[in-house]
Image (cartoon, rainbow, N blue to C red; front, top):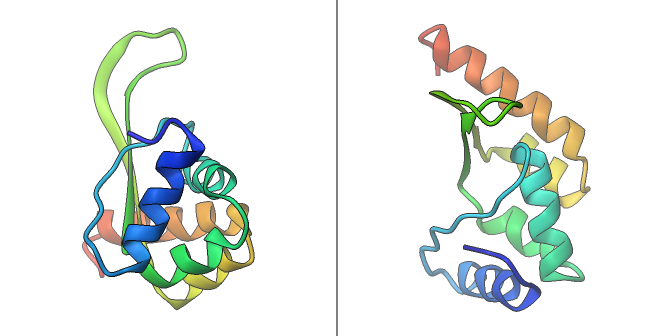
Length: 110
């Protein structure tokens, strides 16, 4: 779990060296998680991440009142469009890409 700058830097460094990194970070959605990771990891981390990241899965199990319910999830698979948006720190576009990808998945497309 990424809580501190040192952990974020390790994740970015190891992923940039070709290691498989699976981790968690708490946030309100996919774009906020990526923004938080980049801010914690520091300068130019968005460039390394945009070259190495494969997917982000966002899972929520509680509503705004803290009640548990069926898990909701979003997935963002990194393609050229998503990599460019991350490199440019365009987090709104990342949300739009994620929603578009999820709609295709739910409709049975690729």
